[in-house]
Image (cartoon, rainbow, N blue to C red; front, side, top):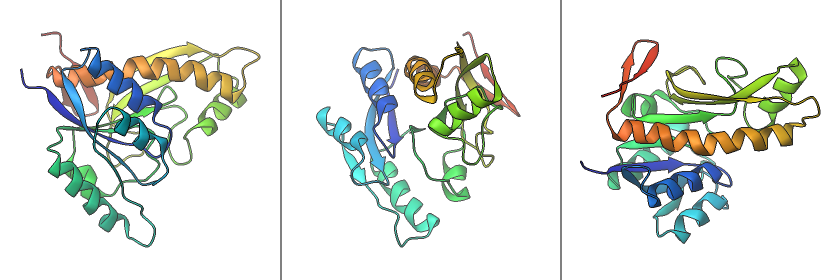
Length: 208
């Protein structure tokens, strides 16, 4: 079986990127990270990639339209023959240009149980603050395909975690991140094995 080539887009520290790299190196994913791209030149995700010998590029978006910026990213992904694109803390809204090209081949990880606590402005600690503020007893993470609807793509995998009475956004984030780091590599491996089938609103996980 051919190993898939993974392109990762990240805007920050890249802990989910690290989880993917580690899973590939442990043989848990039938694939390899082929390239890492950020819109932030100082993103530590780029340093993580370089430490593992992975090509890493920054494409600052200042002074560019979203489409112009995405053309640069698509060109880089194409150059590295990427099969699957992962948004790992990538804090840019995507246009139909990228969404259409990578439909069914682009995943995102969200730090809540979608469809709750998703959508515009729901990222990072904002999500966990909203969960705690609402009084939820459980939260979790969701791996989903990326579509035109923000955080509205077909759900691939989800994992719940408890919300403790004394939780802060930071402590809840830490608990959710641990599960994200396990769940994202699993979703990527299912894609590599051809076990994900999109049927309308749903993503089926095939057993064979």
